[in-house]
Image (cartoon, rainbow, N blue to C red):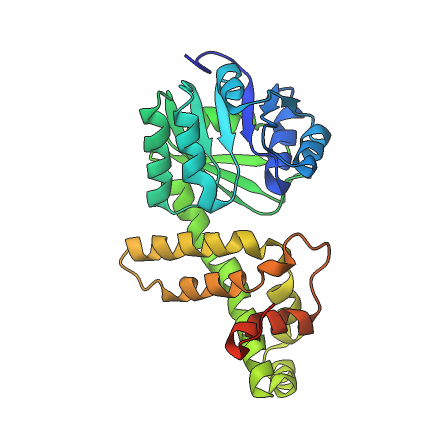
Length: 290
């Protein structure tokens, strides 16, 4: 039975956020492993810097670890869980991805059907947790409290909020619906004003009546361009969450499209210039190939 008794923790996968989760655990003295098979050199470097041990393959990771934590783009989360289910992993599976409550429960069903002892639903609010106080990992499920205890004293604050899987994902969706949703809205507004030739007049009006937007609206709209490739999927998950609650979901479907139009800026070290971002947002409307 893979992972049935080991105290080691497996991380899937050490991206920008995942590496900080692994480092938080390793910094508390836990043995933290990852699987390098099929991963990029950049991921390998992040894992090494975070103090993670390479188990090689997913099968080996599942065999060596009693807990697996998944931190990946939301549209890959269910497939990742299904792969883990196929390994015979028998420990505790933690999905810490930005997915709808319904998808979170489907992820739980996939790993439990494969033999996992327990499923814990999670959602991370905040940036990578390289220092205390900047991020929280919310957890729900029967083993939420024990998983939260793994992070005690680490830079990542882990908070158990209930015994039912789905609650942590719902909280994450509600939070990001505003923060990332309104950033997409602002990006669309700036593109609209540029297309209609009223960008300067809009800025002048904001300076009069919306000082916060005048000072920081552009930075807020474009600051996430490097992550837009990931946020598009998150907006779809939020839309699914709204639809599941019987609420209109169109706003966040549109937000997903805004982020999709910014995916050319994936992983850029600095936010793009306003002119570049607006050109990307308006390219499809103008029939421009980029």
